[in-house]
Every structure is written in structure tokens, then in C-alpha cells.
Image (cartoon, rainbow, N blue to C red; front, side, top):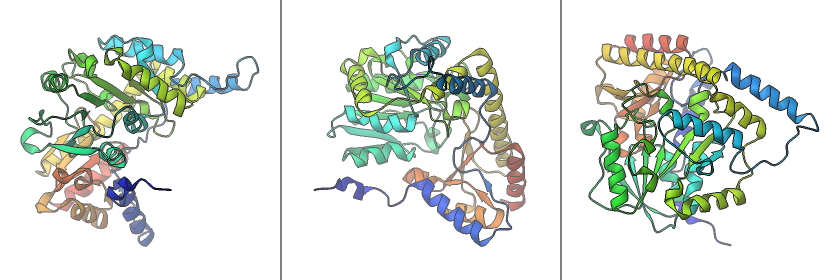
Length: 388
């Protein structure tokens, strides 16, 4: 028996596990201190009423012989796929039903999609970046190249001169909150088409975009269906972080990849539970959209508060406007983990060190707007008192 030695090339600890360990150690030593967590991207607002009511109805159905359901279609029930199809249509993107695959979240599919590609493909990811993109490819033994995202390009890198086969793009970006416009995204589509490459487009935060001129889907860009797979999640859209539901779009223009993904899912995945899919369907109803927008606006108000506080303190930052994340430059030339320790030990605020997202993240720090409004206000008052 031989193990996969590629795992030896991974960082010993996942970023957020290290953060959690440090916070737990601090709280155990200081039980009287109120720690405000603005680090992990977990929502705090409950599921909206329309979703809960749909789930309750589905639970009742599962308790009656006539409406009980066992195994469902691995690619998702048609009622939810139709709802997703309608959502895209409202944004000017037409999809066929069998191009839509329901999943238990974008994170899973972003890793699982790699089953379709040979390990000899070269992967291109921006730096800094969501760690899952890099780690899942290291696990498979692929060569990973990085494209420079930094303050000079507002953390929105352009295509490189070198060739890559698999390209990861996240917009709005995690961790920086930066958003590509249509012209910038068209450059990436043209690059992919020229190099016969595939773009894996993570649109998990599209619901935070409020400017109609900014693309919420890569398929708003001409030619994208010939070179891109899109991933989205209801985690940030509708609070499904603990409920787990998302969707992946594999256009038929990609040829074999659509049928390969269907084959992969029917072999390795049993589908999202019926109850969850009924709740997800309610997200796309008129009432559901109204209710989730209230939650999204709640988080955006928190982001605005954080941004205004940082401006008042003279701290450089991006993000927050079309994203729940604020990406700031650590004050007083502190490195990322120094600033993490400083905030935790002196002001009991938890954020995420930028260096955990890549070498270009060193010296930067991520804050999230997913806390309660009361805690966000208190955290910003503490930062003002820091006197940066």
C-alpha cells in the first residue's frame, strides 16, 4: 500500500484551523474577555422565513407515504434547477437545465471538478487566494503557478504571458473583496480561449454586487461558455453555511466536460437532500429574494461601517463595497500574524492574517462583515481606541 505523498507538500495546518486554535487558547486563558470574531466568513443571520417554511413543508412531505422521497437525482431536482435557470435569466444569461448541477456547496465542487482533468495540467491561481484552490491541486500533484495580485493592480491581476491550462478566478474575490469589471474579465476569457484553457470561476459572493455594470456571472462575457465552469453557493447568498447547497454550471459548449461531470456526480455523489433543495428553491422566489436581500444589506452596512472606520484611522484597504470582506494593510509595518496577535491580545478582535492566503498577502489582513451589527460597532470603537 502506498499513500498519496502529495499531502506532504501541504501546509501542516489549514489557515482557519490555526486561527481557531489561537483564539481558543486565548479565550481559555481569558474567560472574562469578550472576543469579537470578524475572521471566518460564516454568516450570523438566520435562514429567511420563506426558506424555513419551505423546509417545514418538505419535512411534512417526508413523513407521509404518498409524498415520501428516497434517493433523488444526483444532479438535483428539476424544480431547483429550474429556479436557478430563472435566476440566471434575470441577469441576462440563458442556461439549459442539464447544464445546471446542484451540489452541497461551491467548496466541494471546486475540489471535485479536478477529477475531470489530468494531473499534468498547469494551474494558475492569483496570489493572494482562497487556500482551497491551491491545496486541492497540491493534493493531486499538479504544478501551480501564481499571478501577482497586489496594491498596484488593486488585487485584480491581468492574464500573464505564460501559458496555463486551468485558471481560478474568484470575483468578488476572497480574501480581497476586489471585483473584476467586464473589460477585465473579457481579457481572461480571451486568454483562456487562446490557450485552450479552462476557467474555474468562483462566484460565491455575486449576491453582494450592487452595480449593474459589474458582471455577476462569467457567462455575461462573450465566449465564456466555451472556456468556463462557474461555481456558486447559497452559503453567503442565503445563510446556507450549515445547511449546504450550491450549484455548478458546466455549459454544453465545453463538449465532453458536461457529460463527464454528470458521470462523476452520479458515481461519487448521492445528491443534496430533498428538504434542503426545497429550502433552496424558496431562495429564488419573489418573497425569498426580498428577505435575503435584507440580510445581505445588513452585512453590507457592517462592511460600510468597517470601511469608514478604517478611513478615519488612515488605514489603507480595499473591498467591502461589493463584498463582505475588507482587505487592509497592517498598520505600523506589522506582518500579518503580528497584527493578528496584537488585535486579539489587546482589543479582543479576531480577523484573518493575509499571509495565510499567499505570499502577497503578507502585511495584509482580512476582516469580515458577517458579525452582528452590535459587535461590529463595538469592534470598530475598539480599533479607534488603538490609535493607529
